[in-house]
Image (cartoon, rainbow, N blue to C red; front, top):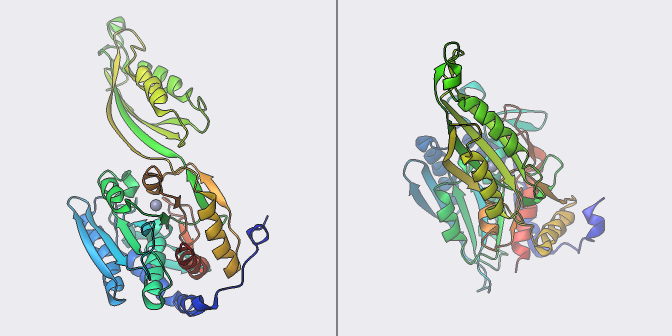
Length: 394
Ligand SMILES: [Zn+2]
């Protein structure tokens, strides 16, 4: 099925041809900037690395005459906020382009496998998720600064803690998105080429199970095994998968016990929970808490130690997806909206009621792994589609 059939492309507005041509001429420059920032390790909490990425992007934006503010996030690095005025006072607020500068890869990864290109695909830590999206946003902003066309003000917000659930930047995202008419997030385009119009939310719950230690040979009956209790809880938690549409649970990490000959006094576990914007979270969390805190076996107990998460992204309003699809169709490619279980910062803005569309960055694959790649041939067309979408939001 082709979107160009669903949405017949209107004649290209020739006013925007210089902007599109300029973006088309920037392929090499986009790849060069991508190489520079991929070759800086910037794991979440790597303050120095995140700052270095921010500095490179800031310099590029400022050289294009764009006003940039650096917002220091002690312990995490910097966020960047760049603003472009609109051509006329449009009602309905600004358009926000978003991205995150942190990656999941620890310091030293660049030394092991720096930026490389093979067969039109770029490789390296964070190349798709989401350094290519940051570069795309920067070039779209520069194109708009040079050629105009955006009626509404445009704001770029680059954050530094998305990969760990945005504990610090979620407040900043809320503040800066207030009143926005749309959020366009440049997470990597899906391997299919599609964009994302709905995302699950995720919650990570760390919990502890306590039992009673005893010698496994001499007096096992005096013990109460935290490992056995955790096993019961794990099965009960997993059984909540599909208890509501789109809900999944996975105990994906456990650490427990002392030695084979000791009834385990303690166990630690991490639960990953995925849900949708429609999930009744109060009811679900009550069920989860009951299971964790239950005395699953006599003389054992459990409690939640920590909980972090990312909000789900509600379905993008059809009009915004259709605008992006029309923009893509004008440029000769077709995209559909896709639902994904992966969470992103677009969940924060969509929970505020702001129309949000995600995965508008260059097409990429296998994020968070050594196989991660960015399809460089999609750099220019997706930057052009983003620019036309911003212009189309008159
Ligand atoms: Zn990402």
